[in-house]
Image 1: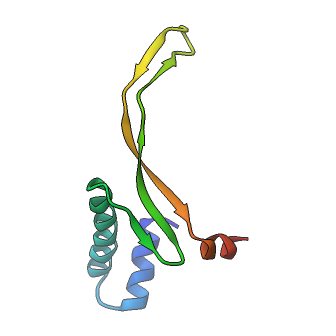
Image 2: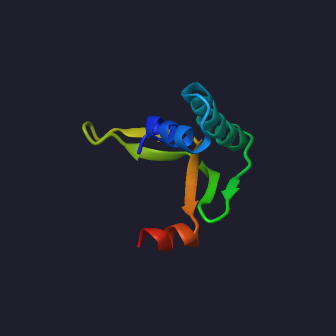
Image 3: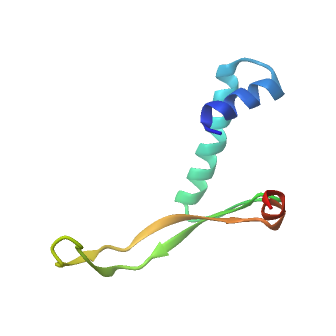
Length: 90
C-alpha cells in the first residue's frame, strides 16, 4: 500500500472528493512529522509509537579506501509496533 492507496481508501470511507481525502492523509502525515520535529512522540493505541532517537557521533571506515571518516551526530525516526499490531500480523 502506498500514499495513493491510502487516499483511495479514505475517499471510499469518508466520501467527499479525492482532493479532500488527499488533504486528510497529508494532514495526518504532516502532523506526525511536525510532532517528531519538536522532539515529542506520537502514540497511536493498537498501532504503535513514533519517536525520535539521537544517534551519537562516531568514527566509521570507508570500505573502499579504508580511511577513517567522522560521522556527525544526528536524530533519526524510530517506530515501535504495539502488541496488537504484532499479534495481527502473526
